[in-house]
Image 1: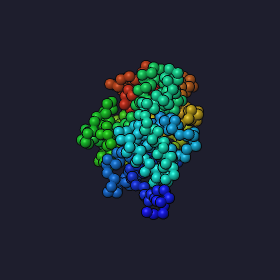
Image 2 (image 1 turned 30 degrees about the vertical axis):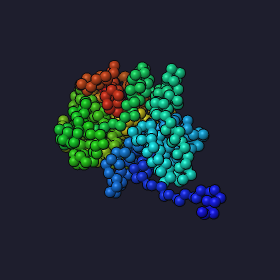
Image 3 (image 1 turned 60 degrees about the vertical axis):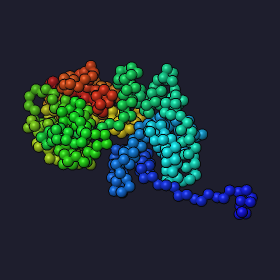
Image 4 (image 1 turned 120 degrees about the horizontal axis):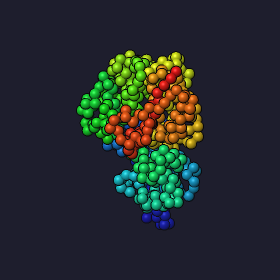
Length: 473
């Protein structure tokens, strides 16, 4: 018997090197990039996955799990923060961000996936040992074991205030949205619990990738030949890929004849293109063209009619993306880098004008879930002057009888109807056009004359569009 055993001491455990899990390490790296660099997951994750796929031990199932861990954790961040806060003995702001990312990944595996409890805890603790060290891994282990004591419904009952006492805070915790966003979306919907619950739930669903077949260059029938692809619900050019579908694997996308574009974005371009005009229809303008999705569709539609598109984008690098999207367009077009509030073209130069203005992006939270945590109410004040200036420039740029489309990827009233109403007070020679008949077959477009699309109703981003016609010089 050894001296140590005779004295009653257990022999020290040999050091065990933590097991590296490439899927969870990749998910952690993506979350750190989102947190540290204000990156977007949809931009960070693809190159990480491509690099990982080059290794023989990372297959399609691994990529799917890594994607679910990243997006699931970001979508439910608010809910998981409330749960984690109930399981630690300090304010969350005092927990190191890398530790909080590991805890959130563990919480999502425990509460948002079918991964068995023991596997979720052990895999996350191993991840913590690799990326945080043994000391903080013990803290992670203790917190996760507390989280594992309840399922998601049980935790929500504990950490969310009752709906009757504080409906907005209840919805914010249950559906993982900032309270101010819940309030704004509720106002835009016009009240009612069912609608806001459905909208917030839709924001937390992973959307299918939607392609656009650019007229004159590709057809929806060609894209439907892709495995498990489906026709879009509303746009004749839209095709939805199967869940997990990779756009880069589609030949027409690689060749630029098709592109990735939400169906709501396609509908905005179609409505403007279909609006009735008085007089000629030869000169079109996209005044906020970056990154180029709407410009590419407008350019193709213009080409079918013998019209020319001018695509203007203030940021040169984004203007480069527009040029890439339009490359190979079947008709004449031009791309320029110009400030849309100080345009180089003469007033009244165009028959159709689109301004898809910079905004908070609250209509695309399905695709960029992290955006909900970055935006602040004061962002509305920062965007407001630019949105009004761009709409004024658009109205100055269109000729009498021509039509302007004002679009946002936000349903917030301060970015939609309030902007349009304010600007129209300065333009007695302009009138709203009823946009609803221009999208035949699309239901629930509201009372008009403008259009508001919704994820839970139309399966699109929450795009807004107002069409305005100049009636006098």
